[in-house]
Amino acid sequence: MIEGDMENGSVRVRFAPSPTGLLHVGNARTALFNWLYARRTGGKLIVRIEDTDLERSKSSYERQLIEDLLWLGLDWDEGPNENDPGEKGELGPYRQSKRLEIYSTHTAQLLAEGKAYRCFCSPEELEEERRQAIAENRAQVYSGKCRNLNKQETRESLLRGRVYCIRLKAPDHPIRFHDIVRGDLEVAAETVGDPILVRSARGGTAGASPGIPVYNYVVTIDDALMGITHVIRGDDHIANTPKQVAVYEAFGWPVPTFVHLSTILGADSERLSKRHGATAMSSFREMGYLPEALVNYLALLGWAAEDGKTELFTPTQLVEAFTLERFTTGPAIFDYEKLNSLNRHYMKLVSPARLAALCWDYFGGLLPEKEEASPAVLVWFFQVISLFIPSISHLDEIPAKAAFIFHMDPNLARAVQENAVILEAESSQLVLNELANHVRSHIGPVSASDFATWMNEVKTATRVSDKELSDPVRIALTGTPTGPEFDKLIPLIEQGAAELNLGIPNVRQRLDAFVGV
Image (tube, one colour):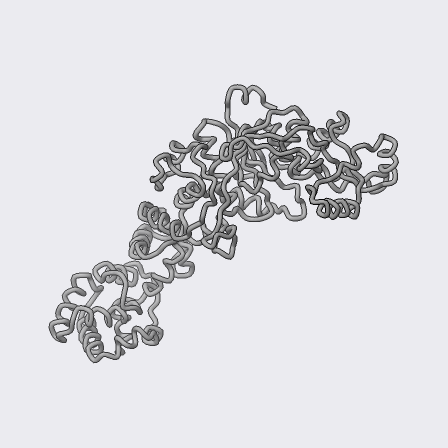
């Protein structure tokens, strides 16, 4: 324990993910709120890896968890190192699989003090107890049958190699704890029973096993020994809390303050899951959501600013505004459109260099390697994607929008029903032929002013409306009747084709392919 830190009021919070899967919305929000509270109070954030499920835990998941936290901008003070297998901090190890001896020592202490006992009840006996409790309309908790085994009975069972668990003797008083969101809570001890601390242990000389310490036990030991002052986590852990409080009391440890965050639901009011859409941070990252947009949005899930209105926050502004008292008890609804709106806002603020770097990999095979690209290519690429930023919600939508810049298939364009209707008009053919003649008679790259002059001359010669003029031309050049303004588009097409030699068709090649030479 670090009693001094706690007495001095130093806040210590933790984020304890399990490396059995990806970092999803719920866990990411938990990490964010712990980070915000640590930074707001000048306290410490500890990251602890809960990897005692050896069958499902994977180092690749742990690496992804760390990468996702760093991508979100959530740094920590103690725990696994960011870039190597080591750890930082004086209260480790910070991986539960490395702390088994610590748990064993504490289990021995509880047994020696008579605060815990070995239970040899078989699954069949426990099931019978459960059925009887249901029939008698009683709480479905363990009866305490093995509480009163004497030393001789216990020794004989161990020598026979029987499987057992170790249970904590529940206190003889109500279990109380304080939750900042829900206030003071109290649970009758008889509704908790004697919670299991260690399962699947076995006695005997051959095949003996110390068993596996369970989550509620090890998380409490870890939180106590690491001096955690505030436990901020999802409300699905409320049911676990009385068992954990009982462990704190058995060791005589101070009980931390709890903060149980509201459930996150989908638009259908069901618990958020993959069927609602992307939920993993790595998926949002691949889709081109910005971390600042996700951090901003996650903070609004179950928390609100003091004025009840402000919703745009940079991470620094969140730290300044954050208090535990602003949590809400009602479920938070994950609204993808609201996230998209925030992402659109933050995309407008991104620097050209960063935006180009974020989008580059979406255009694999169409551009040179990023490290080999000239400054002129980087500037050109930023100008290209800037054309489409106003019309997208996340960056992975850009390749489809910008595809015509790199390749234009006239046959596919003609096959689109909307295009076919426009191109069937006699005026469309007149416009395209007239414009093609202007382009073919021109020598060198086409400038925006050249193109604007020709369009005015074509309109005068053909006497068509603005729409009858622009729609077929746009289809011929881009494959669709809508898109960026010509004065921005034409220079980019010509520069990419000629000056930068990126292998994209220029204006003349597009018109020749569409109209026919």
